[in-house]
Length: 249
Ligand SMILES: [Fe+2]
Image (tube, rainbow, N blue to C red; front, side, top):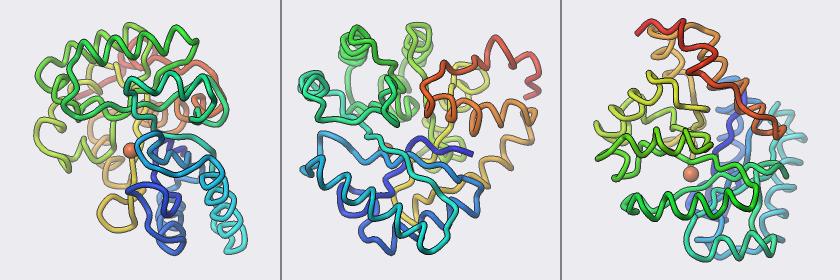
């Protein structure tokens, strides 16, 4: 399986704090069958340089190789889509997912829906595909879930957090993430792991949960096939049109 959203690189953002912790996270990921991981450190809201990113990236990848931990890292960032992001993208100071045209983006939790729609449209004009991180966590989506449906129609790939489905972030996140999944507008599930204890790169519990309601093909689509397509820059498969007819919940 492929995890397109993790904060596994040490010392760059509010994710892993040390190389040891990053290795622990990779061990957990591998035990969960997550063997391909995007190291999507928060981009423009933490003050590290591109050189520091690559140094940590190469360091961790070689440490994993030396310890024979079967996890391959891919570059990327979780881009904070504020007014400056467009300029930073033009200057190539932010990373897309694995050098494709796919950008993992986030907003402040309280961002207004008009700003979300406007900034996404501006970046889409630059011929990027927006992968919207955890839409279920935004207050505007919780108040008006229609916003997520609109964004999906406009070509955004919606990435929900595995643990939102289990209620880790609260009842609103749980309700909205489950609703979006049920309606077939979710493209991909990722862990958004930040550490090796509280927000781990683990999908075991969510797979158990999903398997009660969904066929294995759909679970595979969300956790493996679509994230793998995102890594390669291919279009994702649409759960709604292609697979949702098999949905049982
Ligand atoms: Fe994140």
